[in-house]
Image 1: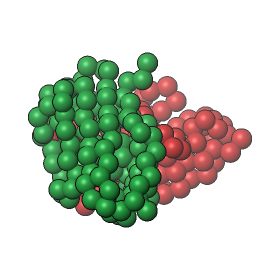
Image 2: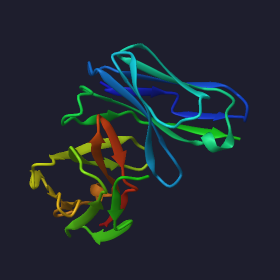
Image 3: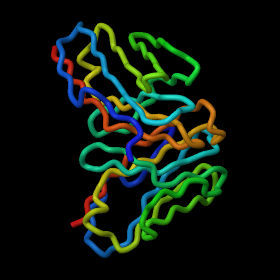
Amino acid sequence: DTAVSQTPKYLVTQMGNDKSIKCEQNLGHDTMYWYKQDSKKFLKIMFSYNNKELIINETVPNRFSPKSPDKAHLNLHINSLELGDSAVYFCASSQDSSGSAYEQYFGPGTRLTVT
Amino acid sequence: SQQGEEDPQALSIQEGENATMNCSYKTSINNLQWYRQNSGRGLVHLILIRSNEREKHSGRLRVTLDTSKKSSSLLITASRAADTASYFCATVYYGNKLVFGAGTILRVKS
């Protein structure tokens, strides 16, 4: 069974379009995350939700909007896509957000290419 | 800015040899974690070491943490071709936010 799943795996779109990436976890975790990995493999957190509540919101353009309909799902909507948005986006989840020892479980990633 | 920095950036070894990767960070941490990423895949958690721990083992993996030097090392013993991947250290220093380093690309030749 897939623990953290993302759809789609690949997304090719033109500048200016709006797109969404979906994420689901079946681990019963309370906290979910979105990360962006650039072409140099640098991985940076974008957002974090705990029980549907936004707890981390890094310096990300407001064209990016996360939505958590329930604690098992965290979707990422991107408006007015730009060339610089091309990257691999990873969803992850963890058991809690207490800041104590925990590990994160990552999805397989969504490779977004903006042309 | 990036919290963790890995060294070396890339490492190529023969199967059976040991691989050592280092990670340095800048501020006090709660814990430090190592992850593996195979090409085109998501990250897989390998090991977590708390700030009050000095060494931890998991199978062929050994992680050390030196908080006075703000550094950690990951040792993979008796490497296998399947260990070929990118390895990232990540620090938890503010709430639950993981901050990743740039990674070490390990290639194990058979």
